[in-house]
Image (tube, rainbow, N blue to C red; front, side):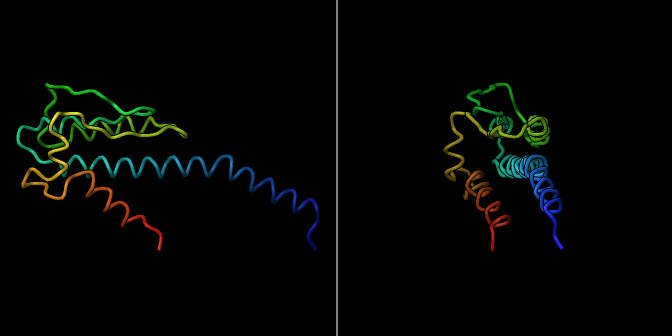
Length: 135
């Protein structure tokens, strides 16, 4: 027989779960998606000089408007590492932005390079959507 104490205990357990486990799981999932997006976008970015690849920026709370004219990263690993450090510091409730403000980034996204005819961001979003879509 179920008692009021059992029901109260069950409700308290659900409340604790909602207050602690769900926000933590939501944050970890957000970090996972942001990390996958960052890696995919950076590695899909066409490379000639490495300037556009090196100018992917990760910020929290507001998108970056920065362009670092001296930031080059042909391999992409430094850009990913720099972005992941910021993703790791994210807190629940913060947005995570992955942006690039070099003047020709839209041309690259629109397929101006033979290396990335399908874009970088658009293709990454499609892949993540397919991977995490609900049946």
